[in-house]
Length: 427
Ligand code: ASP
Ligand code: MG
Image (tube, rainbow, N blue to C red):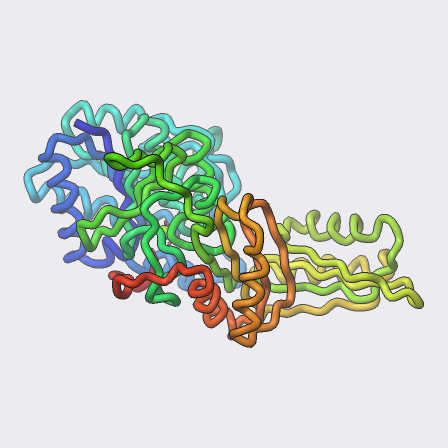
């Protein structure tokens, strides 16, 4: 008998038929003798529709009320799912984030889980019931205000609950069969990855892979939660995220790690160039202190060599496009004080990242990446690297071609036919 957390995304519970299908899956696991805790997302596009509604009644909805609104989505799906399971003769109890003991900080819209007091969940399990928990939400410790964890946050709820109850595995059900070497919506020949380390999965998530949220992977790594990403639309084994060494097959040594785990892409960033920056000590600090003070998280930075005659240089950096106008306004306000000439804003960029722990010890990875882009006629605008990642910025409209070219160049294309995308939305 195992203790399993199962998380179902929006596409797995998009309508009544889907909810009944998932209910069958859960009832089956329960009947097989496992203890099951289910975390569920809002149905289909509910969260987007609620956001739309809010923006129709107010150009700037207060974040506290926005969270109360958005948590309604998960309350609907958790209640319906519990009803559907009960209808199959298996007892199920639904819990809001608050009832499930998910305690967060008070950062509305992007709250962090600080504790899970899983008393109610344990009680439900002891009574022989399946516990159904609303994902993506929690409550502040002192004021009892309802919070949300940020888009895609149900994954984090699932992993946090798995950690709190010391589950054997946290199964994340989505609309593809696991983590792929690239987004199968863009690269149909992408391959399913059988096993991936937290470190690689973190870099994939941070680089735009949407299959798992960054915070979910961070949480899983910190607490050693085995995460199994798989599809609710098939019975296939998915991808295991774990640092446990691969068990050796009969008669073989441990499997060698592949050099490259996958190619991630991100279309959500923009680029700001600060033009004509005096090349003297302290200006970069002033620029990035200004950006930081406006609450904006930056990603890549490039500083050009300064022109000898003028002593001026240009500094470019990338940031979430959603924060672009805020950063521009903050920088514009200090133009005179810092003494730069002007600002350029560009939100038609795309970022490609090649991730793999094996590149630490293999020369030529960057060279092969750049060669693949050259052969595809794609210009590189910025480059950044870490120990296990190389990222490049391209034009947004060339990003898909870039991902396909690089995927092929690193021999990642599958020979076993095309990857299946069951739901289509990635939820
Ligand atoms: N329903 C929320 C969203 O759409 C949370 C989630 O799906 O994980 O972002
Ligand atoms: Mg998701």
